[in-house]
Image 1 (cartoon, rainbow, N blue to C red):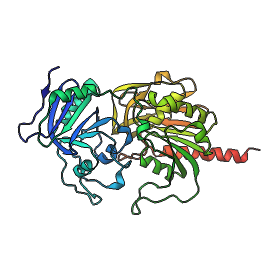
Image 2 (image 1 turned 90 degrees about the vertical axis):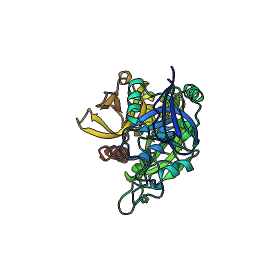
Image 3 (image 1 turned 30 degrees about the vertical axis):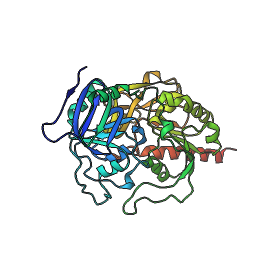
Image 4 (image 1 turned 45 degrees about the horizontal axis):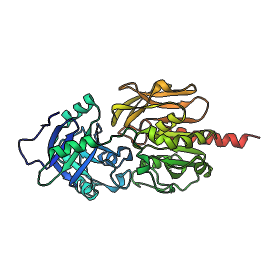
Length: 395
């Protein structure tokens, strides 16, 4: 398909986004100079751009922000979900402005530049979002050059050469290198982040790309957390003598990650230990229970996703980030579907009918304004407490 462009009439373009079908968007680059290829998705959140860029679940993706005011609250290290940005780049409507935020310690453009990530402003993100919705998440090449000299044929070839996320295990690339303890709790005014010092439930958290705030929520719920790499075996996990096992979020194709993760989860399930999963962890649990996952057209990425609890009738406003989903039609007997998306009816939660094992597709730790879903961490803690009480009363 011949390339066509959305080139602005004023200002020399220093950024260029090219879709695999040949569509070209020109804009103004910020952050690092260079070229990157990735899958393109859009996120509808009005806040949290720093948390989104540092969410390991966005590995292999460029994020288009539908909200135009990106960068206006600056950057603060306290908001990082991992040490550095993981998303390949970002696309925004308006160029980032000077930040206005008492917590800000820097500007978005400088932060991206120092960390080797490309930003592209001045883009018609509404048109781009409509394209993604209609055609699915495209493969793209994005380049930032101060001289504005772009080789479109090279960029189109680069976009078409991107392998895509299907069949790709990215959890191994974003997981921790070795096990570690976590004791930091959720942020609270005026103290900020505090440490958990009291005894708690021993939880092994499997890191498929875990966000820091998930670990904080576990600690705040009374958990003594040990984080282990994605490749940990059931023997490794059970050697910790955990009261519960948590399966984290993460990027990539769940079926590819499941090649090694499913065996571990099955081993844990055989021991009748409470298990809680989020996002990729939800998909890993479903695969271990015999269900299947499928690639979505453009996925769910945003902080305004309504999810219905089928057992209580409650509707939660949630934060989501996933391009694959559990196929509810493949859930085996004994696995109960607990939550569904009110946008498209896709699966958003499961539980075992006879064991304290459950998971959700969305992010209960993300608090996108509402804090509707924190109860899930409390449910996990209560499941472990019940197991402990039962063990103490069993003759």
